[in-house]
Length: 432
Ligand code: 4AD
Ligand code: MG
Image 1 (spheres, rainbow, N blue to C red):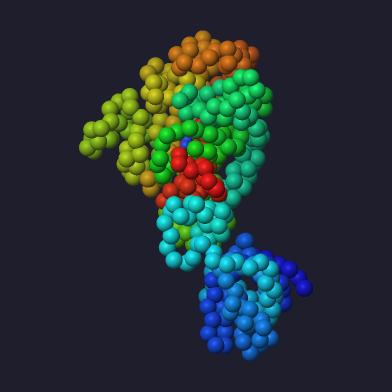
Image 2: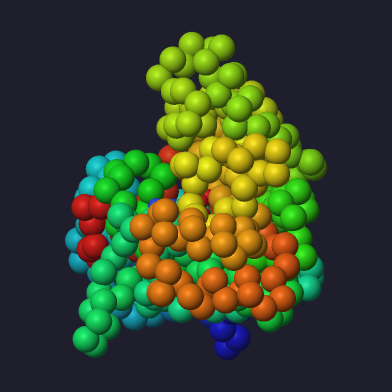
């Protein structure tokens, strides 16, 4: 007997196959039982006809409980009513693993309950769809950067430096000294860009942020490209092409998942249009003040209502450029005309999803950078290796970081970032 997964169904129409699956639901009448099944890849229906199978098979079908695992044998049939287009006409069932009193029933459950059962919640069709889209974004990331001639470089996770500020660090013992979990691989990626030209990293990052919002994780994954001989304006072009490529890839390759999530694909189509709009920080402040936001003045960072208002002016993600130097990290290059601004941009996603990219051109002047290191309370000795990069063949370079989970949440159109990663680490949660 050929064992297949339901994804291969189209090649086996009319043939008898065997599939390993779990039972998500069932209903039966006197003569027919419908099994809702999932094989880890697809969700599909198995039909058991009382008159066509041995009576013990029909009895077993009727007795199967939610999440029991089975091997089902049957004939693949076309079924235009199902999303998948195929179902299985079952001739035999083997029970593999029993499942009594599965805690997540088809009724509504509260979020904390579901989070406590995240190890099981992952099996539900919505979570499956989100993870499918996450996987596609990961796949498309590698495709994009490889096609554009970047090489992947892996920065360390245990570090002695704090690029994004010293208040949000996870401290850990490193034998007889102290170390931190990486907040960002950027500084190492700058070294890598001087060695390999165009590089990207893709790894976990950690921030001990005391923020309990629908956009913050304590552990999240970041994609950080860094490009030698490149200025901020060119980096913005790479950023918008990359983001549009991600949305295009999901639209082309994840139709079933988008349908499960009831995501409006016409809206997503707009995000594949280039270029993305750009406004300056100054203009953004003026826009907010002119529209009744008197809780923000020049020199302050945006909160999420501000970002959402700005995002709502456009149909695409929008770049906010040239923030005040004071509210950005030490490594950003100062604007040539205005020394109170830096050469940076944040990319704000539409529909209230907030910042998905932070990026900038990097300061290349040794003296300016050394002064910044000290002014930001960082240890110049710990960062001597980084300052070295400005001594030996320093070149203009720029880069950015895209938050994977924010991007997944936005493209999926889901409410909260906690569903965009298999096992989220949140302010009040490290279980399961
Ligand atoms: O803006 P951030 O802090 O930028 C950096 O870390 C730079 N060193 C990147 C670089 O230039 N190489 O973070 C980048 C992105 C944010 O735009 C956001 O998408 C995501 O990382 N991010 C978070 N995602 C989830 N939870 C958090 N707590 C996040 N903090 C940042
Ligand atoms: Mg940022």
